[in-house]
Image 1 (cartoon, rainbow, N blue to C red):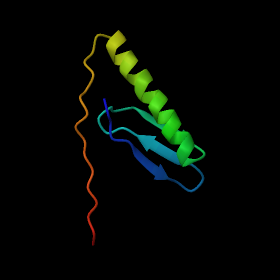
Image 2 (cartoon, helix red, strand yellow):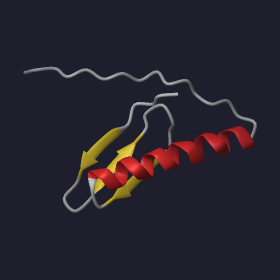
Image 3 (cartoon, rainbow, N blue to C red):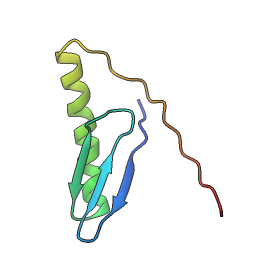
Amino acid sequence: MKYLVIAEKGENSWGAYVPDLPGCAVVGETREDVLRLIREAIEFHIEGLREEGGSVPEPSSTTEYVQV
């Protein structure tokens, strides 16, 4: 599955989260760190959902840039 990941730069770190997987979020020092960490977090999150007998949400979020 291919999930949309939002990566944001903060003052001193980077953060990333997955809109289709509520609660799946990470923080790291660099963009590369958060992309690696969010990949691991997605796998862990899905594994936990399956172990609990829950359903795994299908990816449904999309992005679009709007020029203003």
